[in-house]
Length: 498
Image 1 (cartoon, helix red, strand yellow):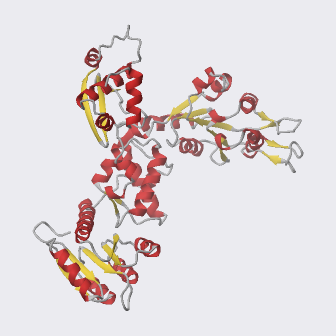
Image 2 (cartoon, helix red, strand yellow; image 1 turned 90 degrees about the vertical axis):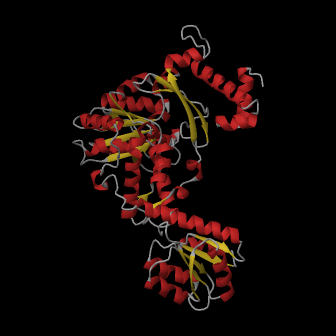
Image 3 (tube, one colour; image 1 turned 30 degrees about the horizontal axis):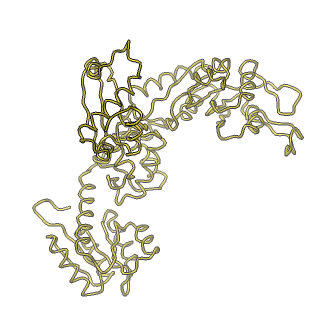
């Protein structure tokens, strides 16, 4: 991108003299320096001769070399070259081919002058953003994270410490945390560093196996033990003898199977479905769940004795929103893996895009972030992920909450302050005051107030926003980050006058 003292250069490649003339006039009005080529061959030659133009408008259908062929030659000469394809035939094949070979966009003939100028401006802005990234230096070296667990935050350092403590013994470990936080990676890391590393590691997703099949899956079955059992089957525990078995989502396991898992833990033996004799197994058990087993015990849906057998050591995986400082490292790790696997050439993230990623709440945690990086890398032109390449649900999301409620009071560690936020799109409006001041402001007496404090905070906030918006529910709902239907329900449930 030229500096501010010069104008951007645009090359128009089209075999139609009138198209080149009319498009040149439109773009000249935007103060761009225009050059022309009357064929695909001439355009490719001009690009290879240099200097590279800042932007190219390229016709798809020309005599001789087609626009798609020219695009491939141009991108071969300059992989970062921005190219807008022009066509009078807006077919599916045209759009697919254009994006497949790296076009920034394509535009239909006849042209709308305002749209042409807007497209040129957007393309050149993207080019400037990519160049502004400069000599991007990754925050990590992927070879230092062979475990696949990335992060240097204090929360992850505690996880690493506990992993190190439990690898030297056969102690049973319970790994808890939200879905997508990397519980299986932790289990595999424990296995890799244990004395059982040369023996099998088998992961079983208890939630993915129907209740009537999970016992057969884990313990095996004898021929004829049930309909369809046409032969004997060896279960996971036998296959994993002397190794490590990882029972993921153990909170979804049926009570009958829980009893048999308890027997394995207590006596080190199993019995195949339909079998009559016991089989000794030497297996280390690692378990994981995203459910609150303590509540399930109270509801009689999880055995208390099994809970204590599994929960000898616990590793709690923090959600990604509580370790946002790790996000740049995780993004770099994902991109380096994609480049190594030749799934993308994208290796950079612009500062603005990274700010969006760090601000987002990531309800799906690391798994969601990994999927988003892959998606954005596929969409990105050039070698840099820009804000425009991010999914719209991330760029316009409410960064301070991922709950149904859109007002989230939090106490800052060590600061003794409460942060009450009204969220509007991606722009939080935050008021900070001392915790005692906040309670006084809301007239809450902890020893006397019967209404839950969070509900009281929400009611007060809804009432204040309605007052500020002069009773306009549409504006109030937008300011609060909720739908009008949700706002009306809040007004009714809290008995507010509007």
